[in-house]
Image (cartoon, rainbow, N blue to C red):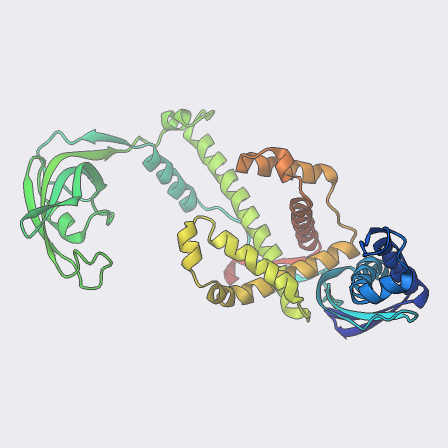
Length: 424
């Protein structure tokens, strides 16, 4: 068998495959013999009809079947011979098949393109120094203080102010009739946090527990609820109760209540350590993304449409995962593809670059690493591990692990320059 390869573009190849006449003849004869055994021809027992008659009756059928069989059998052999792994066949062009002659056909395929990687070791990345100042620690302490605050009923009969938590019963009316979906009991909101309509909050601020209020709300013409569009709602509300936030004192006892801390200073030291670790992780991610973006900008790659389409489908699936089936059916999928195409192309380009660097640097995914990832994914999705052990899932996990390892390799081999504090 003869195989000729033509490079149409970096991402496309045209294979011309010539099957020798001896193999063509053997396949055709085998098909005729098989038909002869099974064919029911009047006047002849099965297997006894003359071959000339069989050929005259079934020539077109046999030749079409021979063409199909020979392509199915020889195409994988041809790929193996020229050591090409196709992403997708975009066209198959067979010549006519004739008894006693060689059979020729051509297949156009998409492949992973050959491309030059920009210099990826020693990429210069400027970063800011990692520091945690006292102000940041105090901000984090105040956040913890807020999280552990208690809500206590306001005992004194004082006017309500921002920061108070108000508990309301209310009923909305339209043209004097109560609105079924505009009613609540024991509705709680924090004043000053935009949790209530501004007109409602304006009426409540300065009021006291036990008071009743009537607030008129006018809705704009362009709201989605056509029943309320342009209408005035009369809201009858009762200030049932109010609570104030009592913050714990920032002292040693507060620190002890949060865990194994003996003092407030020890808590502050731990917060500083956690914040430094968080900033280091963020800087690591910044460095890896910077290098990958740098390489993506520098590299010139013709992207296989197959990979771009596959990434587009993945992106759409992720974007619509929580959307109802009805909403998914009604969305304009082609418009969504067009909107996401540049992002998909950039991601495919980055994946190709990482894959090539990984190959050059012999970066691989260990079997144990893949197994652990599959186990974690199965636990997260609450499905049996066996269901996740498909070639598709395993391949995607391997790709992700290798990609992450390669990014770490690029970071470790980068030229990291820390800016002076004056430059920040």
